[in-house]
Length: 472
Ligand code: AMP
Ligand code: ZN
Image (tube, rainbow, N blue to C red; front, side, top):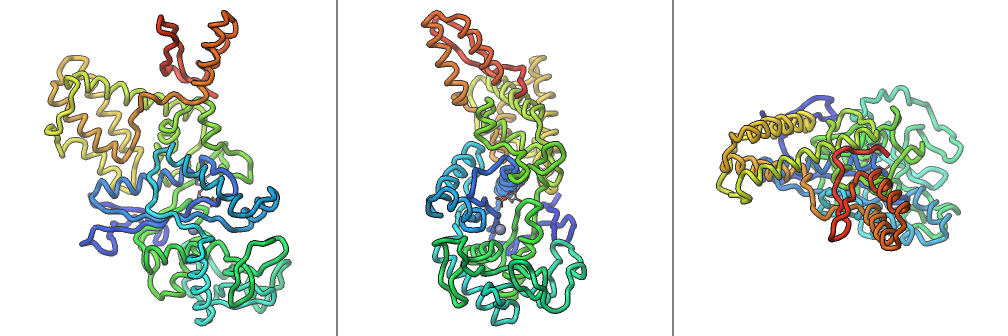
């Protein structure tokens, strides 16, 4: 089956045809974090979907060039810096660093570039684009000195979101509380400086100010990837107005189709509602690590459902992830034993396990792909139970795993003891040396609640993952 994706623009499954089919190089632009606080795991659902997309394209032989922007200036970052009483760059630096730590823990491949909106080079590009939009009559400076995009002048406005613009129609100028726009749907390209901005601002032909969020992405995307991009991704909340605005701005400047395939992931939910900062129903990665879950368990939990289906976050789901990974670990250990503890690269069967890759070809159907993986595990385990799997076949399966694990990246690490568990284990060691048996037992229970089992051996404590997972 050919590789195909659901394109938000057409609302259809489309065969994937890159801009330059011969070169096998493709460009992906992904909207990155706004660094005003630590990202939550809902955000990471989006980044893990994008990681899966990149890795599958690479498995299929494409060379991917991916850009993820960092939004380090907007209303929220400015407000945060002001409240913390520190310069904007200092305020955002801590969250940038936390973001990079988190993507590493989740084994998300780093993008080739992480442009930051405040970089002078991109600010210049934004100013250049806005100037061109004004020149073309697609933008105007209003009485409040801010510059707005004139959506009525861009005939395709609303095509991505399938939005009926007549619902937004208005005649003449609409006086708004804060600003003076021609149309209620016109969005800011350049925000004139005001007192709240403090010392954040750049000089421009329209006076001191700062860019709007949407123009940041258009400028960074076209500066690094050119006028046309193969794939652009984000969560569904990015479709309108953010991505709609990106199309209007980029195409308004270049006159060329900006993006060939728009891919959007559904939200991570909590009790049926979007996990978000504003609702306060979110968990960060450190929250889950503290509860004893590992990076790869969280990765699995966020990855296992098709990206276009909403995924409900539950502790049961976390424990299912733990159990699923324990099954994979056990299976790999058995295969290794059956193969005589050596992996022979010669035992490769390209026909084996094709269903896994074909499922991913079908709009990244990860649930079907994992279903096939677990079916294969069941069958090979059965064969091993009956001593019917020879060393060469075990090796073939191990080589297959190596191939699909380049997409999944779910293999366990031996030293994966979470920091929270290690700390409790240290405390327990001290309690035992002090012969505080009650404390030691209590600590054992706390360690067990985090999913780990302690055994006391003559060489000291030994920690292993509990097969029965606990909820948090
Ligand atoms: P933000 O930092 O809010 O701009 O979000 C960064 C990325 O995370 C965007 O692609 C959003 O669409 C995505 N996102 C935010 N909340 C969720 C959620 N609950 N589930 C999935 N993706 C999300
Ligand atoms: Zn963006």
